[in-house]
Amino acid sequence: MTDDPTAANPQSVGRLAAFRYRDFRLFWFSLFISNIGTWMQMTATNWLLYQLTNSPLQLGLNGVFRAIPAIALGLISGTFADRYDRKRLLLWTQVILGVLTLGLGILDQAGHIQAWHIYLFTFISSSVGSFDGPARQALFPSLVPRAVLPNAVALNSLLWKGAALLGPTFGGIAIAAMGTAGAFYANAVSFLAVVVALLFMRAPSPARERQRDFLAETKAGFSYIVSQPVILGLTVMEAFASVFGLDHAMLTILASDVFRVGAHGFGFLQSSRGVGAVIGSSLFIAMGNRSLWSRFRGLRSIAVISGGAGAARLRRRYRYHLGRCPRHDHANARSGKISWACYGCVSTEQSWAPPVGANRNRPGGALVGRARSDCHGRRDHHDHDPAHRLAHTGNSKIYLGST
Image (cartoon, rainbow, N blue to C red; front, side):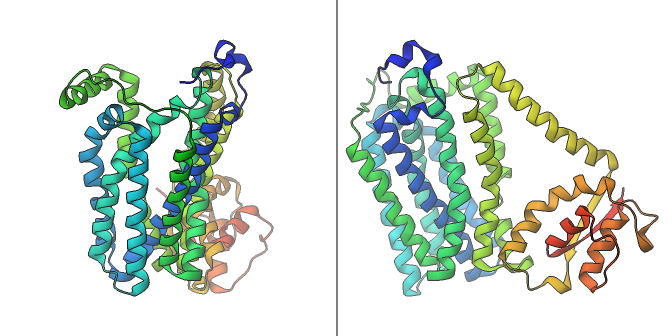
């Protein structure tokens, strides 16, 4: 880590203190541009593969080709980041990834792209990315002093999450305007930002002195993780989130077959996942240099509010069934995004929605009546109810039933 007067006075560290350091600024903004390009490519890859195959199974298979090298090579890639110069390692990975993306764009534009091309590209890209990630994360601590490192970590979390908010939207626009090849070309250009930043950075990133052989160092890394309960818990949690929390294939199918919003709407659906992540990271940064306990109490308050809303929903013991609304088959990208984002919000509104009409004897009957009247052209006298308006925003009808 660099030497700086703020290291002796942690209280002087501001909310954006890491941006005071030139190399961190260069690296952060170049990675932000590159991550936006990566999200554009991920959006285009899923959309193109589903258009080529029209098969959910083959679409999901692309995730298998991404996971295999990430798991296998991820076990040893951290040792490479320790043993070799990280800037040089990043230069190689960025150049290789850029060339691969450019080749995929050329194949797509020429009309020769096939599903196996995408599988092969995904496998090789994931293999290269397995070495890119550890080197990237290991380089950050050398760009700021120790006192500023927590702020740098918080800003670093915004890199992927902020790009997740913008990248898919830009990807959907690029696909609608230029085809999927346009998103591939944009990502290929985005890798140049990182290459240029690495060439202009002054902070050294020498490899540490090798004291043991490769396998011994890898084994030592595993031993350290197992010996630290907090790190082990975070690793397991991240593993579960990576396996079960990513829904790229599901969103692709929903955008194409259910909402019928096209590539532009698919980009908006993908972007909606980044809203909460950006808000959470921004709150953490806004807390500044407060103690860990103070930050925990602030986040705990937010969790209590969110948990209370969830508990109220569970207490009412309702279940929701979403079906297609014949009248809204023409849904556009905006309505598709709203219906996806607001699905969970309906549960917090239904507890005070008054019953109406034929559904008077069923809990939440007003919501059912309003949604059904939307689908079949009937209207009732409860249009002023916010819960009714919420049901009207989506392109689905919602059936409420007690368990």
